[in-house]
Image (cartoon, rainbow over all chains, first blue to last red; front, side, top):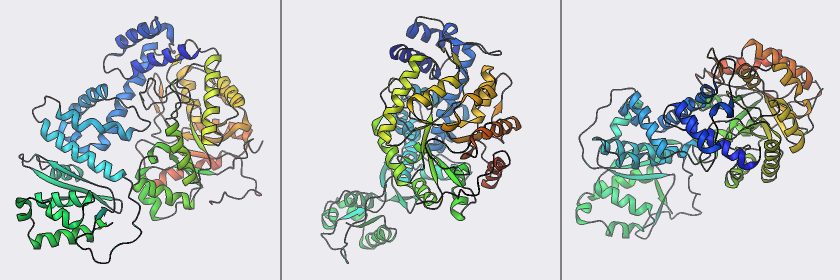
Length: 266
Length: 286
């Protein structure tokens, strides 16, 4: 089979395997389009299965594989949608965003945006939940920056900081963290009313952790993580954000950031 | 017969490195000869999985087993992917790197399945060309595994065992012979498993895979979800007589039981393969 013919054959197989609908019609259409033939002239039957039944085995496994991969990264979303709802979501999502990578770890990258663009009435909650879950996955897999060569003994106004381990800052419209915690701990999760929350997702050792931040703390951590010097980061806070970070809170925040090695002097 | 033409060692009996067993493996050094890691699970992570693999590789021989090379595919080989595989293999001192005789997708898409290819002359030439290219990029001989499959192409002009044997000779690659896959495909396609095993050149087999499967009545699904069936053990014993003791690995990927159960299942292989010559020591790491 010459390369072009092999490529057409592979396009036929893939078309059927990833098709979200009924196998027989999908196989007939794909065989006609790619090869100008019928599935029965391309594939052999077995003693017990027709040609279409046989390629249908691969088609059935494809959806299950995609479901399992997305459920591993999005357990909260899977719970929120329910078993059947999640399968239908996966079917539609992978039709729109099929894997183009050698790894399934990237399959769910578009889930938050896909949900946000959907017309579901609860799309904002689901998209926020997915954003948090994607952040957890990315922080879990992220590469820690190389350690700095030397650090100032006492941080001063000109000190810059860097993340000691992967971290992500999220501004969400729903407090989805407790929902995800409940799912993971096997408790009945409860959707809370919409209210803005700011979340720091970071890694300590190899464990992913989460910390809710006030608006001022969020702005300060974002500026420091972006490499702004301490004094400049504090100066850049708005009046409201500064009110949000009185000296006692600021001191507590720094103790936490440095103590947990979330940010270290660069 | 003993030994293979690549001088790759008999690592003994190993098991697949799976996330669910990480705590057990880290807590105490399990008594297995070697581990096989799924390559793609460790390529893009700087977190715990890679740390665990590093720790394991420091004390036990490791082999990398890929599922995304798509050696039978018609898209160009993914050079960036191969560069990452090569770097990971160096990092963990992988004894060898393997993948499957299949295609995984086309036109830039990946199905993440091991889809069968037709067994004919032109496809053979195509695959041989790509094996050479991949081996050059990896700077090591490639080890390729026979897939399990559920469908056959009308275009195939030779049996799978002939394709594999010729592919290995013409591309000068090594083979990972999955005995369970032979059993599964023999049932699904109605061929004789012993004919298959006897046709594979013994001096190119550097590894065996064993696993359980799920019988669905009309066909067998290669699920890696159960104990190895007696008939697969018998086939393993038969082919081991030809090859001598060859690195053997048990795969268990669904409904994974505790590590002790997986290890015990793997160790059954000792009863079915010829003993390792006393003059051959265990492979050391480093």
